[in-house]
Image 1 (tube, rainbow, N blue to C red):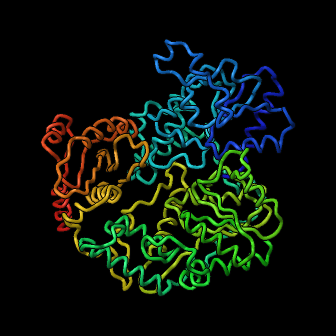
Image 2: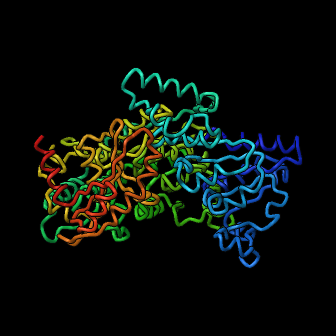
Image 3: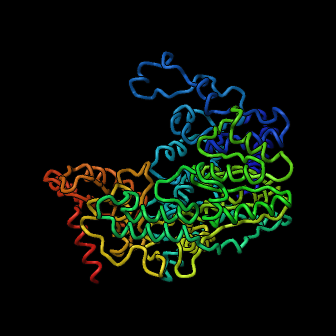
Length: 614
């Protein structure tokens, strides 16, 4: 990340256009947040009109659409109503568009001949069955380039899909590929390790992977500041921490806060306490003075002290923080203490360059103002495609679940063009008598980061099961030794129930178990894998104790299973549907026909009891 891929590609495009004025145009596909950066690089490094561009997204896209009144009736009946008007491309030599536009306007874009197609952050098309992936592979491009810092996130199917985009057939059919290769971390026998070496040799001529140290010999150092990794837990934090665990253990009592009735809810709250010590659900911060917040939050006290040092050096800071209410608190704290109000850029900030308050304009303003400055960003929403080299201090006030995404955020500042050493801070709240959530998360992220140095491994997200041994004040276990009861299962909300099922299947011996994304899961909530077998699971939670539900879960997992069979070729996948209450007779009959194994609340409680006795 930050090696100038955009500039290199634009230089290549400009050279091709200069040599052949009649060359077909180039198609660049990227997340909308990156497209402004492509335009900026063109205007910054190339002569005006040397690269005629067309932006095919936002307001510009609306003007290029073919009105429905001008469409042929037969086309309308066929459902292909999203089309571009004739001559839409004009004299453009570079078309900048989004993955969503590529998917929606697949037919019009595929009808155009492209000299080349570049997909930036190409992991967006890592799913072989996604509509956007299929649309990308249908484009009539002479050659294709795929750019990503994270080619493998979950399985080697990710990299198969990317190579199937740039050179179809190189890695063979997906089914054969999945049977032949495993991720390096999963390869246990000499034969499996030899096959991984074979895969590396096969893809080597088609890839270019470089680190900044390889190409930028004059780049300053990236320095991790270690002394902020041992901030002592405050008394308020200890009290809230202990109370939250006590409340969780009494979760079946009446009147207990619902946010602490599930393991996932407890994990999320303990994560929050370490950064912002407040009772559950207490999000209003304006009533508490900054001095009082500073007294009870060691992270805030450390941050304000560190910002004072940075201000004396007249340097700039990026603070990464995920929670919006905490972003506002940080903004208020900096304004009150240092007399400058930092911009906060999050999902509410416009990504369109024409907006006066657009993300890029705010970043540009931050860069141009000389001297000390602070900007507050969410680590994921602004994790790629943004250059903020004027800042040389990066503070991860809250942590992500994935070290690769955290590193992408850091590299907004640590990139070519940076003239000063970049200092990276991971403030961690610790205790003398137990391992806090903050410390446990820091340990897990360090471990995951060591895996991600191998391109074929990928880091992947930390999941709830990784916190099964989380400690409590006094060195006890946060989740205690009390078995999850049937009553606990009956009371779980949907998120907690999915996390519970993922954890339960991992305890049943499926060493690679994960929840699928909330959007686009294809009817599958949990995937559990071990060796050459696996289970795809649909989870349904209902708050009405004892209620019988129909066969919706059965239908969902049966419909979604074929997609996951393609994602994990060579793995014998079975199907399961779980519910925290009961299935009715129709569900059981349909499950029998479709070969879906059912687990109701009684079955799950029995598995918990059986596993605990082993």
